[in-house]
Amino acid sequence: MRCFIQYNETEIKLNSMKRLSSDDYIQKLEKQNTDLKLIIKEQQQEIDKIVNGRINDLEEVIKARDKFYLIIAHELRNPFNGILGLVELLINDFRSYTMEEIESFLKMLYRTSKITYELLISLSEWLNVKNDKMPFKPSRINISPILTEAINSAQLNAQKKKITIHNFINKDIVAYIDKHMIASVFRNLINNAIKFTDNNGTIEVTALAKNDFIEIVVKDNGIGLHEDALRKLFKQEALHSTYGTEQEPGTGFGLLLCKEFIEIEGGKIWVESNLGQGSEFKFTLPCHK
Image 1: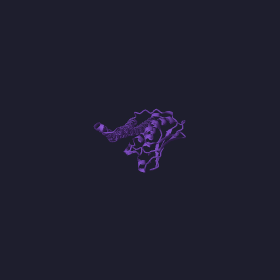
Image 2: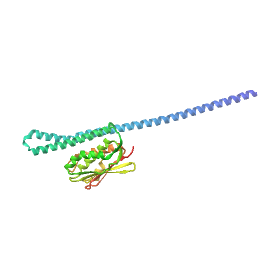
Image 3: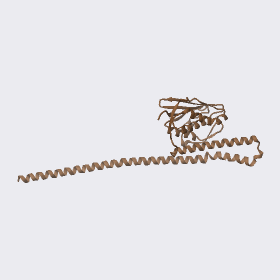
């Protein structure tokens, strides 16, 4: 009898252990299932984030493409119409014009062709940035010589309006930049200043080292900007035709390109201006890697 009782107790204990073991196993399965669901959820969220990012990138590319087509259709059509019209006049009535009139026509053709070419260059550079086809190769470079080259390339336009450009950047100031991008920034900002500065005006470019970055200022004593124009600067969706003090056409595309390049460099750009009191375009560049 005692043996039977001991056997029965042993069997009960074994059955209890089996039930505990089974319960533990079920709990482990449930935990693993919960953990797996959490992992799947996190992975799905990460996939959704990547997909949404790609969708946003694609939407930006489509916007850029549409804007590019709009600029091509509108901004390039006008100067080409002017070029074709002048050429047609010369072809049809060449002998009826004086040499002074012909010279005037040729100057207009040159001016319009130059503006159109500059716009095409800006469009090309901007598209390369948008499509990640423009290499970014920064190094520690002296800024002053880059500015000097940009000023030299703009001297013809400046001389026509008797505008003086001063390079006040210290020759010892060095930044960690891509030379070609910053050269484009200087060209666009200086040409923009010339466009919106009256005859006999002045443009000054200065730089100040501040801790780990350099602040550069392109200052003019031109016509300045009103508040609405300030809000629209550097915005792709707000690009529109504008005209300088001598009716030089523009789209704001060069300034948009400046913003793109400076942000790639790790800096920022902004403008301070009052209508009738000139403008100061300011941007920062890193000193080190």
